[in-house]
Length: 401
Image 1 (tube, rainbow, N blue to C red):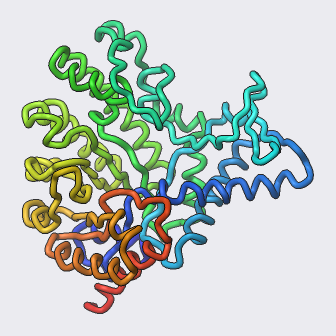
Image 2 (cartoon, rainbow, N blue to C red):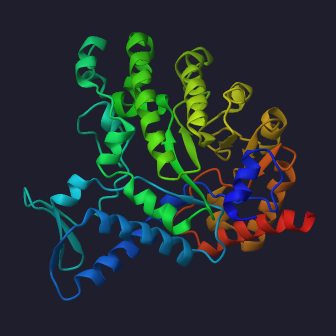
Image 3 (tube, helix red, strand yellow):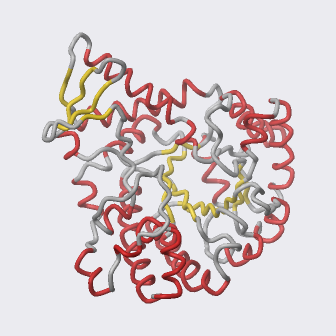
């Protein structure tokens, strides 16, 4: 049984040969490794030259190869899943040139002459296509931009649905196609995508989204519907390039942030149809919910996701894996929530192994279980700690037969 089969078995509530290991957000942890691999390939391509144009196909291949290099160079023991993201657009490649700078490569816009040493990551957000305007960078918190959103009638003039076919024509699917080509059916290929409510943050900001729930619930539901429909076009693209599943990220719905009434009206109802339609498209669903979920854990368990994943306890709330297994472990695969701060950067390898075994002893009481983490590993984590997590998980069921 290979790694992909192992994850599928767990998500399908069947017994795999080994307990699968799927640490969360490895794309974030491996970002520097991927960046280095990508630069190495352009360095070789340039040779003695100082500049070259960018081919969309070759750039996508370089990015895919960099993903392979990152996983195989960072880890001695491979996790069971591989993170994929959408790639650069053909338009970007057509008007961009790469040049050698003094200490780094520069990406130069041939139209404007503007340059940057930052490698464009090209992980477009669903909301980039829902509302066509410049958004703050990912590093900036968005407090309130709701004044940029008008009435439903005004928004209808701004919002257009970009189809899966149009996303393909832009070239966004080439990178994950190459990633799938490299890893084949040996590993579970997954994408990360937000829930409709979580994407609302990009359009309204945090305060804006919370206030609009009271001020204009009709507008909020209109936006959520548009976001859901656009998200599904992305999901169709994920499926077409060979993805196996989606890690659906849910934020801003912790029990200390949003009331049960608003949760049901603006979150639950949209998530229910969202997850159902993703499964109908043919992808496995892992719903990852941030924050204090224990007061509504049974409600989350009614959404129909194949697997449920959660943070580790922190910020004055406790997420108890044993309680989760007891409350929603029937008819669900449960992902573990190992504390990446404690066991990634402060613990020994033996302590990491002991924590993995502890979570397995709890998790196997659910109908399905995958060893995972509650948050991304800090960048300073020794890759051998992650190797220990994966290896320990894989040792468990192989001994049980």
